[in-house]
Length: 478
Ligand code: NAD
Image (cartoon, rainbow, N blue to C red):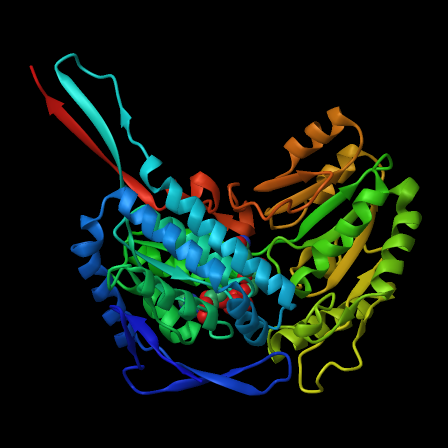
């Protein structure tokens, strides 16, 4: 199957005719081809978006924009099985997780669609002779650079919010997982979005992505991906003096106190690193466990790890393959480094016997005990690798939890209400979960990081505000 860009409501091949092979991580075989976007393609998409922003798209009321998004939500929901099958093949994630992504995308579109006409401005008391109105206005044309791990969800939270706020958009999906975004963009055409409001240019990060980040016609950028690329995108945005939201990586800790409800905690401690094969920015990749229960928790987590299996997405295994061979090798290299540091592997999972030979499968690994300074405690592996570190008291728990360059998410497990609030509020993280982790997908909840995890917030109403700026009207009347 061959897929082209969607620019100005039309399917358009790359300006130089080049295509990229799309390999399925399930078996390593080519199953589709996508257009390899060029600087000229990005330029055409930005021009189409500008045309919509200055034309049909901006003539719609906020309510009309919202209705279109809600119609798109319904179309996505009706198409959820097909989207899930496509995502599983493209990205390798278990089918039920891919379906959950499609349902979450529909919910983002519904949330932002119904919020579109509730984005109010302000009136500011000022001189008695003047009336001051502060209006929330869209940035204009927004660029969205999306990673491969949750294409549908990240499209929903970023493009959904930008469109609801009245921006016209240009999206560059990840070269490893573009297909569901292209399909959703074509659903948007079917439900009546004006041409040019939503444009998708596929292709490589270093060409299409870099061209989008640097394009002078872009008024605001949303980037989700690695910290290194985030730096490049923000540097490019600075040349054009435009803002950028950076949603980057994480090394999130789950802090388990000795009074925690372990029966409740254990499945979540494991799932938080296994979901999507650990290729989740908010993965709970570090366990900090109070000394008195350290061995007991390590034993219980180990038992669960030994039962984990990576396998074919259709079989709904614990985890699918890694996204590509580079990612598989990256994870394997971290496992080697951990062993090279003399760390103990407390338990390993396996790879299902029927997993196709050419796929990028990795067996999950649990290391314990792991010193806080270890590379596996400090660097984001982005794979099914969990480490456990003991702590003595609350102060040490907070120090260790906050002791990496990242600050995306944290978990706190305790039955002590005062302590849960105290420790929760001491976390340098954009979201803190108490006696749960990643509860309910969090479409309504502001999300984003501190430090190396980025800046700006997406999701929730705050994510909608992010895609606006203000215009203050000062009216003299006396
Ligand atoms: P990546 O940075 O390699 O790629 C992300 C996107 O950027 C892709 O679309 C890619 O094509 C594009 N890109 C690559 N080089 C570019 C360049 N020079 N200029 C412009 N665009 C470029 O990241 P990845 O490997 O796809 O994703 C993994 C990383 O993303 C991890 O660090 C993970 O934690 C992070 N992530 C964060 C969140 C979050 O919400 N905070 C969500 C998902 C992933």
